[in-house]
Amino acid sequence: MRLLLAHRHELAEAVPTAESLQAADDEYVRLLEDMPKPCPLVLINYLAYVRRQRGQHEFRGAFLEATESSAHCTWEVYTFAALTEYHVYGSTEAAARVFRLGLERYGERE
Image (cartoon, rainbow, N blue to C red):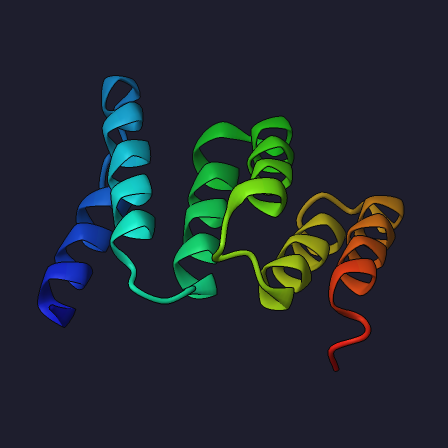
């Protein structure tokens, strides 16, 4: 199974052409759906892929969608998104908002 997951991840990461972006998105969705337990690392890799291939607006949209609907969205995903906002996009305000959202959702658990 590890080899299969690594191969699927490799295929999803190695598609630079415009017409194959949807195929990579579909592969990430299948990978997320195939996980028997929540796996934030897969979601983090998907968000990093969206950031690289589609840009800031799509990254934020994918993150917000994941916060509402994905079982894989744990506190680690919020931390990744906040640090991406700060280090990649240089937005301290957006990073603070993401950290606040994460604290609202997970603050009582830690």
